[in-house]
Length: 397
Image 1: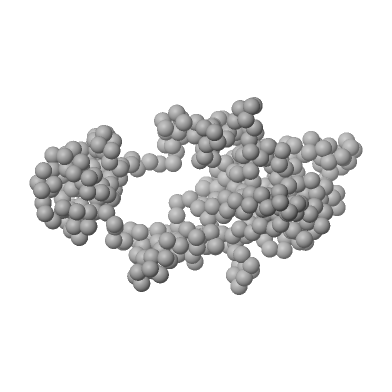
Image 2: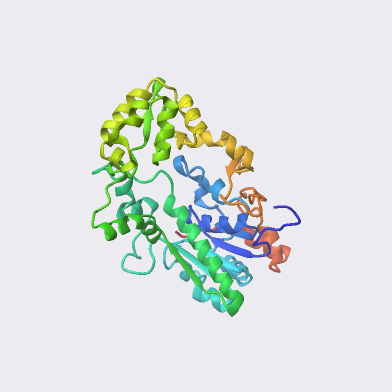
């Protein structure tokens, strides 16, 4: 945002004791919207920094626009510094195992005695109840919460291709914190906010739960479902390319048949309405696959775009770094990785007064802001040196 239009949460201080995805996502929302977000890490750094494979992108994605303070919370001085931090915070976020923050004296009950205005966000696997002792992961709750059942083929449950519950659980934590901040404006007091992976997953599959409640018919897994539309599928075309094509209204059907010269299909009484076409979907799709097989994916895409019909290329995530729409609309921002390399990163999918909230701070190095933050808490140079020198291992999990 421009200098004249500061971000909405400029001046808000958020202190986060988080790792992995769910907790950092909550802090990221506030950070991108202008808050000063201070990430408290153990002296060895957040373990997410060292993940390989599918976790390699977690740290740089979810920790931009934040400051890093390295503290050993097992030491008296480290805990004292953390308490000074939370005493000045508007929002505190944590996503460690139940009981961890209480052992450190940093749970909501302890922090709210120091700072009654604090909004304290606890991000867990489950909300309090019979399951809350279990160790949860995104994949765990996808399996037990019906999402993997709906994503995979019958008898073959499959997790979604992203950390959907971690990310959305963090977002709901931020939404809850925003509601608590608004209430604080009226009452002068903060409160505890809780968000959880399992309950987030249940919200995601609620449409299928309600389908059963309304119709009495269980929802079939998405690959086996009876589609509401006859033409709504991936087509393999010339040279083995693939493209998703959809024709979902009767007017689109007329446009589709006209675009490809399928006058016989347009006149076929079996295909007069969408519901008619759904009843003969298996035959119709076989017919269309044969007729469209000689076209390239690019040709089909161009024709569908020209006639306002829904279509989509089958895109790999890495290809989105060069997506022309994202490039033109400012959806990707330059980012410096902790190792010094440059890349681009997707921004929050919102605009504020026509602008995307961008990257103000690159993902911080371990303890990059420790001295500045501690100085702001009233520590002198000798005390800062003592605290910085303490290294007795990582924050407990």
